[in-house]
Image (cartoon, rainbow, N blue to C red; front, side, top):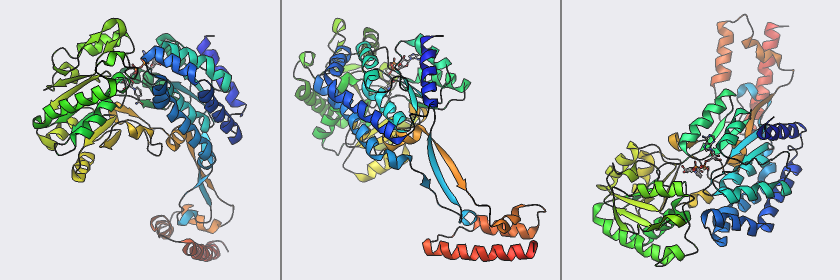
Length: 489
Ligand code: NAD
């Protein structure tokens, strides 16, 4: 039996003991996980530094702070999330108990990506634990150091049978995918997303796919360009552009292009000094393969800012490309690197047309002081999320669902959405063995009269308050009594 198979079997066996289900157990595991982020910050940061050249503060800011906040929320709310959720009743169910009971799915497979290796791998795990599941955690092998630290640390803090870590690359992931899971939560690129879905289909396993794509950023000519460009530059160059929701490219009118370039340039200097290569807050491309891929994207475009690079260090300077054409190489795929192409357009209509010609993006950014422009952009396009006048920060609002649409993914998570995504929302209808007279309308022999009653019960949908419901209940009892008398007594 392969190592991967063993891990899945152990997780399932542990799940079947039922110990992941009690709320106290879930909360204890979540608190243990929280302790990991407090006690092992140094190990975590050292590994992320080696993988992506993130600073220690940067790792806390972009990786673990959000996880701590997510754990806090789950610990506080899990009782409420896991409780039965009463639903609205209709005339037929007025005297019944009708509710949704969230229940754990079973064993979840979590496949993480390398760009925010803790954030994108542990965030779904928090949801899985809160929802009472077992989870097999597969961090990305591309972030070599982090994946090892995660495999070393998680079993020290949380139940290692219920939540095992499996490390390895494509063959190991493929072996995992041959196993049967109750849900697969994948973060990564679209091409592999399709393979995940194919593998999941063999077992009819539901999937959440957190994918990427080209997230557009429209800058209106009437906005404060200094503020807008600072926010865009932060969104783009954080983690060296390797952020799934980074603004991929700018759409703006040609008349403001030079000012946009100047403002982005100013922000680059403010954030990363004159020499980003020596700045501790400027990251590196994850590996040489991606370095070569990103650099090749600049080939047929004009560099306005940056452009210098060093292959031995996987360094590419924060770069702006100007007058980029839609058929340029950089516009054919998600950049996932520190290149910011500017595509001149003829205003909002043109920008909307351009966006709608492409796949539905994960994020869509609009910079404008005009609410009407924001409204039009929201109404006339589609994307996983929309953020006006800022970048990235919608990710940190755990009251908002985070996820893609179309090519940028399916399913969503964060906060309660993670809990729901990794739960089965079980429909529960609890009736009593009385009021049989009311049921007569559905029993043969079927007659027009009974149909008339059925139409009344199913189609009238009065908006009743508590008093109204009580009055109706009383009326129903009378109707039931009449029906009983008429047909049975
Ligand atoms: P990656 O190379 O780390 O791959 C992700 C996972 O898929 C890894 O665990 C890897 O082992 C596995 N994998 C790779 N090839 C496989 C194969 N052939 N069969 C089975 N498993 C395989 O990460 P990546 O895909 O380079 O990540 C970058 C992409 O992820 C970007 O497109 C980015 O936008 C997207 N992303 C999305 C989100 C989000 O929340 N939507 C977050 C981060 C990254």
